[in-house]
Length: 156
Image (tube, rainbow, N blue to C red; front, side, top):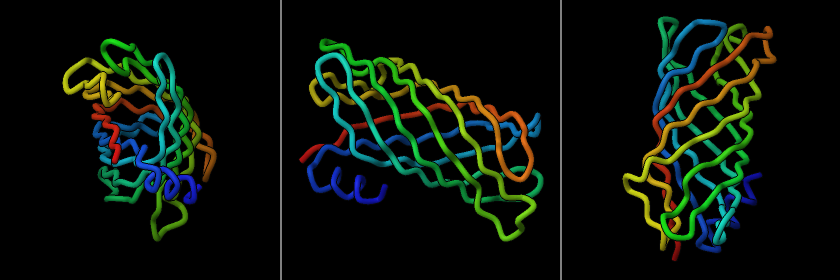
C-alpha cells in the first residue's frame, strides 16, 4: 500500500483530507482527528482515491493513535468539482494495552458543500462524512463516525 502512496506523490496526483469529528464504539463516544494522504485520479465525471490515514482519538480512557486505509469512488461535476464520495475504510487503534486495541471495517460517504471547492484542480473543499461498520477485535461492536472533512488535490 505504501508504494501506491509514493507513486502518487511522485506523479503529482496526490489528495489530502483533514478530518475531525466523533466516533462511537458500541455507544461509547470519542473525539477523533486525522489526515489522510494518497494518490487519486479524477476525470470529468468520476474518480477514485486510495489513501493511508494517521491520527488520534481520545475519550475518558485516554488518547490512542488511529491508522487506516481508505478506498473511495468520487463523483465529480465538470463545472463545480467533486460533490460526493463513497468508499470503504479499514481502521485500527494503536495502544500499549492489547485489550484496548480495536480494528474495524466501515462503509463511508461524504458530501462536499462547495466551500473551498475548485473545479479546475478538482479539489473537494469542505464536506460532511458519515461512516458505519463493525469492529472485529477484540470484540464485535457497532462503530459509527460523523466528521467534518476538508479535501484537497495537489498537483505539480
